[in-house]
Amino acid sequence: MNLIIQANHAIPANLLNQLAGLTLPARTEQIGAHAFRLHEARPHDSIAGFCFEHQLDYAFVDARSSLSNFGLVVMDMDSTLINIECIDEIADMQGLKPQVSEITESAMRGEIDFAESLTRRVALLAGLDESALQRVYEERLQLNPGAEFMLGELKRHGIKTLLVSGGFTFFTDRLKDRLGLDYAQSNTLEIINGKLTGKVLGTIVDAQGKADHLNHIRSQFNLHPQQVVAIGDGANDLKMMAEAGTSIAYHAKPVVRARASHALNFTGLDGVLPLLGH
Image 1 (cartoon, helix red, strand yellow):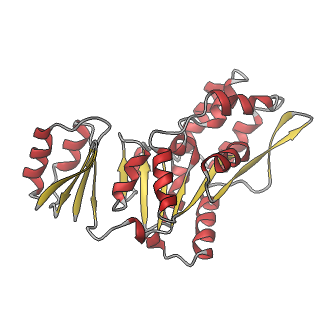
Image 2: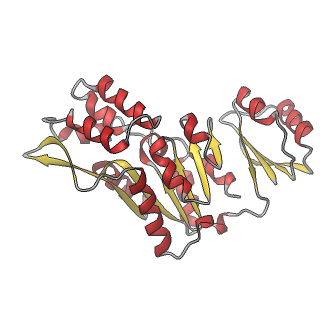
Image 3: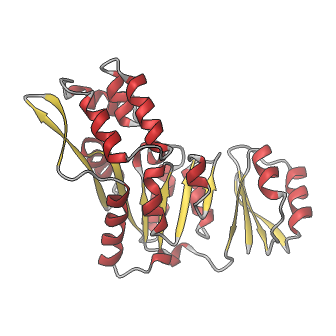
């Protein structure tokens, strides 16, 4: 196995030397400005604590892994591909962000059912002018660091991309077009006479819905689970992550980090690529 070490800052040589002393690699290779691959490294109980203390992301990756092994990357939207929770920012337009954010956080931690949480949050938005959605998209939504580089490399290697979200089509559709994603699935807000009604149309895309969409696209291309990567940050992503051969917790809640193949706590989304053998 190779040990991948990444950071969003320069990694001092003394830290790399300490890690090499713990893991005894055959050699150390720099693979990016702030990324290294320690070839044939050995596991050590101290690595997790050491890396977290020094704000390093680490992962043991099969030496045979390559981007060519993968055919589909599925990602969450809010707080994964983008830097915000859209519904919280929409609620801020109504002066209701604290109430909505509290429900969002509870759902992210897995304390309440997602569909119930979404229904409760959207109900608070009743009467809001739909122009608030455009304002959130234009004024507050930003891609997380490294997103465009990651997506560009995936596209260059012919890997399909699916954005699947418990959020809203207003945002996922625009991101799909803007970023050249292959597929996007999310929830549709009911809007009548230019106002949000406080209701969601159709079946809510919840944790099981995310997993179902992943499997639908996977089957469409006759891919094995081992050829699928899922990236998420909240409890609502766990079912889809369980369906993928490789799951990556991105700046995620503890419950998600504990069950993912890999975790990125400090680096941007470009940190996904070395985990896939890039």
